[in-house]
Image (cartoon, rainbow, N blue to C red; front, side):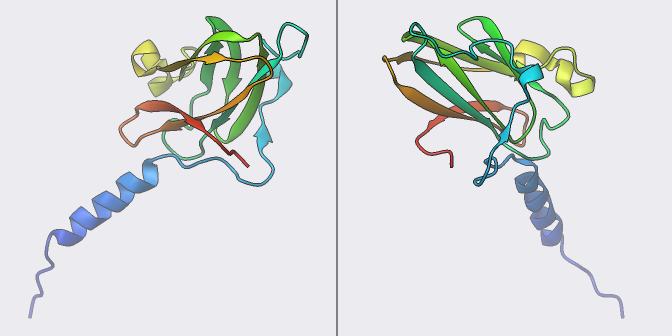
Length: 150
């Protein structure tokens, strides 16, 4: 006797794979700091740069082969890997944060600006804002403001 297996298991497997491909928030304990060699700007606190941006990149399969380039107010600030955290010290005022796959990367990484995400806000004196960078299963990059990182 041959038993026919329904196709619903294929749909369930597909859904599970898609969910598994989305990124998840980075480590909640000790964060993995972005190495100094990949931090290019805004690394020194001074009387002019009293505001702080903290950026955490998610972990997961999607986009994991690519560094993300991080621009703060049109200045290349960092190249971040998955699960990394970086802090930037900036002057109070308008903030434009932009992230995209690094163009120097291989394969999918070369998709460029069409996969970029951006967020803008205004920073007050001595204010800290925290942001999370995540990827959806379809390759869309998101930047979202969060209250607590760890």
